[in-house]
Image 1 (cartoon, helix red, strand yellow):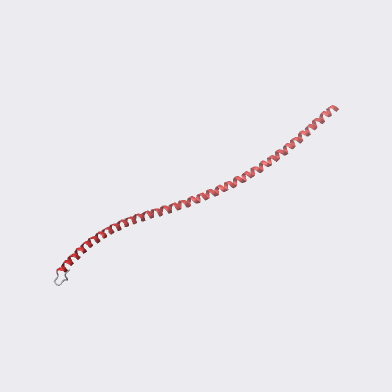
Image 2 (cartoon, rainbow, N blue to C red):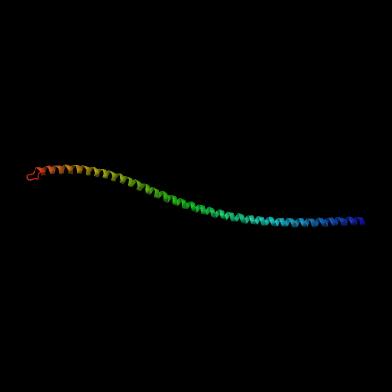
Length: 134
C-alpha cells in the first residue's frame, strides 16, 4: 500500500509540475497575445494615419488639378485673344504697308510732276521780256 501511496504521490507531483508548466505556458501565451494586440493597435493607428494622409493628399491633388484646369482655361482664352490680336495687327500692318507704298508712289509721281512744272515755269520765265539773261 505504501508503494501505491508513493506511486500516487509521484503522480500528484507530476500533475503539479505539469500544472505549473501549463500555467507558465499560459502566462507566456498571454504575454505574447498582449504584445500582438499592442502591435496590432500600433499598426491600426499607423494605417489610420496613412489613410488620413492619403485622403489629405488626394484632396490637395484634386484642388491642384482644379486650379491647373482653371489656369489652363484662362491661358487658352488669353492665347486665343492674343492670336486674334496678332491677326488684326498683321492685317493692319499689311494695310499700312500698302498705304505707304501707294503714298511713296504718289510722292514720286508728284516730284516728277513738280520737276516738270518747275522746268516749264523756268522756260516760261526765261522767255518773258525783260528777263535777266544768263
